[in-house]
Structures are given as structure tokens and as C-alpha cells.
Length: 502
Image (cartoon, one colour):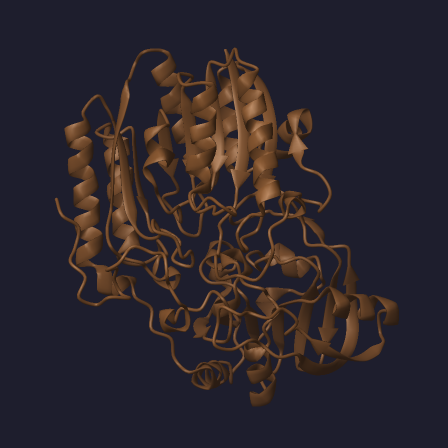
């Protein structure tokens, strides 16, 4: 048995000013992983590629890996990069002789000229090879279009947010594919959308309603009623027709039952639509609340979430408003992760460890999609740490994965240790602090540019959680964004929207 594996994964924030060239998909900023190097890199990791490799190797398959292209969320993928990635994958498909194709895709990729990046890739694959079975692992934040699921033999979405089941999701999809190859099952699919844009801050599977929706999907799979059942909360910071919540269910030959399960998921989500809305509070109030909670130091820190500027949703990671308010209100014993500012990092490197420097941090990327942009923040501090930014994740989203943050600095103001990075990266793991000489458990406050993913590994360290509405293209205030292309009416942009029709 010969299996072709490939990955092309990007969550596109169409409001983000961060560009998405080919180099953004390279883990070291230089070259893509492919072939035997990709197999060695991902084997045994808690990633989709890790899951695909596990199932393929257990089956004794001959494995060929085309490109593995993952990029942090940002603006639309540049057309030249997208075409190059599609050509590489389609070129591998065209070699022929495959028994199955396993694809690690995101589901919310927008490329210049294509708002359904995954569907266009699959259309091209099927134009070359209309019959070879395809299994796909999708992110829970996929914005689903018909070609994404109708051209696949099987597609499975994550059941957890934070996404701690990436490898498991790929394994689920791959195992169904192998069953189909053996003639044990014949997957059929049903899917549908609800007219709603759930706020990302209300999508976590630690709470109602997504916790219950994902439990329904898992129960149907475990009982055998569904081969794969997925509730996609969607990615709302994509101004495209298909943005929003959807459900996709595959069964063994019973499309009517698949449709019944889809409708049950959509109806449940619609009835709970108010719980998918997040309402922010003024920034000064949030920081004051955090300060009051941290008056007495305990064995766990208070966590402040600078969630409007989460780079894992396309944020620039260089907005300064939350950091400025923390400094203004005088919070002490704070670790702030972080500000993406290569120029500031270079200045600290030139000054050296122990030097005192005054820098204008952040505020360097204009954000024309918002009514306001961030401003540089002047800070004086001591250079405490210079790091190459390499570490291996031990827990959380992708255990065993080698991560490259790029050159990284810790700048200490005396009250706040500010992490300065050269690549946008979401602070989701204690390992990211510890490689810089910071023990997160010992801090009075952890201020991080994150939304939900931090809960997987940093969550157990939190004594209290305070969400801080700063400035950024991941804003939870939809009124700050202009939606021109999303289907209308849609809740909560249009409060009187009618629900999904059975």
C-alpha cells in the first residue's frame, strides 16, 4: 500500500496586515519540510502529520511525503506562494500509483483570488486523480464550503479547543480511510451551516455550548453511528461568504442519518447562539480587576489575556495598549509575552545582557481594517536574556514538536519582564517562558497575547483569568470591523437572523 501525505495549513484573517509569503510557511524561515526530513521531524509528535504517520506506519504502508507547509495565521496567502504549494502537491498526486492520500489542511485558508483555498486545492487534485481515496484532517475553525468535504472520502475536525487532539483527529480520518480501502465501509457525507459567527473567545471546549456539541460528535463516532462527526465553530475574522459555524457528518452508506445528525448539531448551536457571544469590558477596568486580584501573592499567577492581538488568529503581536495600561496602573512582578519587534530585539542584542536601554516598542504595523492602530510605547529596562528561541514542547497543543521563535529577548523594567520576539508566536506553553529563564508559576501576573490555546498547558497555572480588550485585528468587537462579503443575515451582526432550516 502506497500513501501520499501532504500539509498546507493556514488560518487567514482577512483583516490582518501581516503578509503571508512562502517563507512564512517555513519553520526556520528558509525552507519547507518534505520527504524523509518531514517524516523524521513529525514522527511521534502530537500533530496531524504525527497522527497520519502513526497510522500509515502501523499499516506497513510505503509513505511518501510531499510538502509540509504550515504558517501562523495572518493575511491572505500570496498568490505566488499558493500556486507553488498547489503545484507541489498536485505534482506528487500526478505521479500516480497511490492507494490513498492523507491531507493536513486547516479549512480557513484564503488565498489571493480564492476565498476557499482548500476547496480549490482539492478541485485541482480531483482534476488529476478523480478516484483515489482522500482523508483530511481539518481544524475546528474551518469555514466550510462544499468542495472541502464532498470531494473527500473522509474528513474529520478537531473535537477540542485548545486543539490538543490534532494527532488523534488525523488518526481518526486515516483509520476510516483504511477501512474504506478494505471495503469495510463506504462513507457518505452530509453537511450544513448555521447563520452565525461565534466569537472565538466563546468557542472553548472547556465551557458550554461547544463542550456539549463536541461531546455529541464524539459519542456518535464512538457508538459507530458516524464514521466522523465534526462541529466547526468557524473562523469569524475572515470576511468571506462561508465564514461561520457548520456541521459535517460522514456515515457508512446512510446519508439520511448523516443529515439528521447535522441538523441536530446546527439546531443545538443555534439555540445556544447567545452563549457564543463575547462581550468585552473597558481595558482600564480589566487591568484594575487583575491588580486587585493580585494584591496578595499566591502560589499561582493571575493571567491577563491580551486577546485582541493574538497572533494565532492573525494578530500583529505588536500592539502595546494592554502593556501600557499594566505599566500605567503599576502592576508588579509581571511577565508579559510579548511584543513582536525585530528592530527592538536587534537593539537589545547590540547592547548586550545587563545593559540598560530605552526603546520604542511595537506599534509598527498599521492596521487599516480597524478604526485605530497601535502606537509605539517607550520603555526603559535592562536586557536580562538573549535567546536563539529554540525549544521542544513538552505539553499542550503539540507535544514533541521542535519550535523556533527566532531571536528572543527579555527586557526587565523592574516591574514587568517583557518578552520581545522576532517571529509572531502565541505564548501557549510554560516551555516558552522557561527557555527564557522565567518560571511562569512564580510570577504574580502573566500577561499573554492569547485567547484560548493557552489553557492547554498554562491553564493549570492560573489563579484567576482576566480578559483584556486592547487593540488588534482579533478584536471581539465586531462593530470595529467592516464585513462586506460574509453571507447575510448572520448572527450577531444581524440580531433578527432566522435559524437553520431543517
